[in-house]
Image (tube, rainbow, N blue to C red):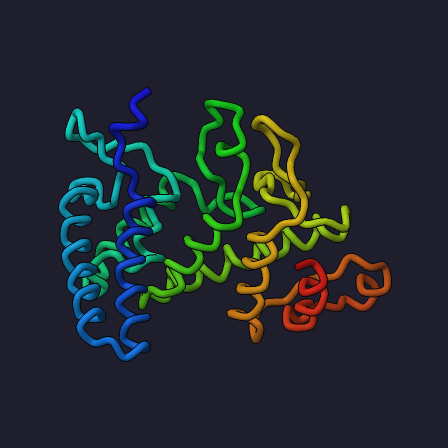
Length: 249
C-alpha cells in the first residue's frame, strides 16, 4: 500500500478547479487584483497538472506515483474528472476525444445502469464494481456534455438517461433514493458492499437527478411502470418528475 505516495488525478483536478472558481468569485465581488491572482494560479496549476498527470502515449490523465515517478495505467472513470473541472487546454479537443475512446475501450459505457466506479471487483468494497455513484456519473456526464464533439455529447445524454431511469425504477420499487446503485443488471437495484448497509436519502443522488432533469428537460423521458401507462404506451417528460424528487430533499 502506497496511498501516501499517490497523487490522484481527481483530487488535483478539484484543487485546480477551486482556483478557477475563486478567481470567478473575486471577479463578481469586484476585487480585480485577487481575481487576477487566482486566474494566474489556475493557469499555472493547469500547466503543472498537464505535466504531471497526462500520459501522451496512453492519451489520458493517470494517478502518479511520486516514489516511482510513473503513472498507474489502470483505467478508472475518475480520469475523466479533468473534463468536468476544465483543468486542461479546452482548445485541444484531441485530449478529450482520446480519453473518451479510452473509457469506451475499457467498457465503462457498456452497463445498463450507468458507469461503475471500476471494471473489476478486486476488493468487494463499496467503491468498486458493480457499484455506480452519483457524483462520478455526474462528472463524466458533464465532462462529455461540455465537449464540442457531437458523439461525446450524445454519449453524455445516453448515460444521463440510463442513470435517471435506473434511479427512477429503484425509487418506484423501494420508495427511497440510495447513495449508490448496482449498474450491471437490466433490473436496477441499490448498490452493496463495504462496511455498512447501503444508505438511503440521499443528498448527492437527489442532486444529480435534479440536475440531469434540469439539463435535459426538453429531451429526456421516463417510461412509467403503471399498468395504465403501459396500456397507453405513455412516457412522462422528465420535467414533470421534478416535483417528485423535490419531495425527497
